[in-house]
Image 1 (cartoon, rainbow, N blue to C red):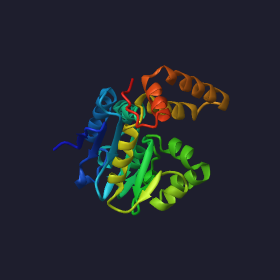
Image 2 (cartoon, one colour):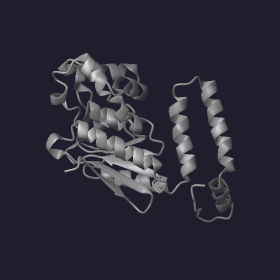
Image 3 (spheres, helix red, strand yellow):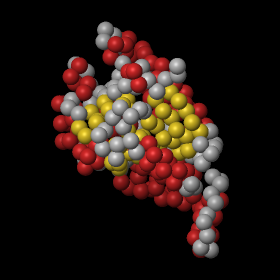
Image 4 (cartoon, rainbow, N blue to C red):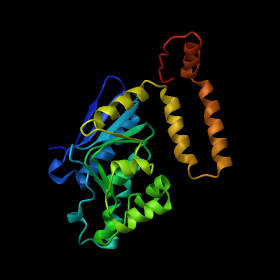
Length: 256
């Protein structure tokens, strides 16, 4: 059985579901390989404008496959080159929404943090428990978490390894929205459809500018923003959007 399931919807939305409930979607080698392949293909698919990533009702993804790494040496871990499997997700150019029900721990939390929007159910649990097994996050947990919630919250999470709930995650800025249990996927798909109906070039430039600008000095980031803003005036969607607004009608965006 495949470790993932992919559904392409007619409205420009793709749903990618991790499907290993017996392991709580632990990030095994085959699951990582499938995710990387799907994100590479979705990036190149001109019909897809937004993607929702989800797991199951009890676990989004419960962390790394410890059985596969318990006896590994440092050189073995380096030679596995797991960063190559994260790269298509890290570099995914289109809006990505994570729908989190249940546990998102360790690598699962890091996977969710690759998304642009995180919708979590009320009973969802997040955490970076790597310290409890003698290691530390290795797929962005120390960096993305700190950028999302600040040093002092991140240090508490990373150094204690204790899980925390969706309400706390929302309060500290880690998740975008908390919804009733069982509705995270529906809400994520609703958001994805709304985003997919927007001009896709503008959506991609917004994502690109936010992510690239976060690590630049403010003046450099503002210059990049201004250049991206000006570039959009060469798109057909900019002309359509503004004309539709002035003519008081619904715009029809074509992605050109």
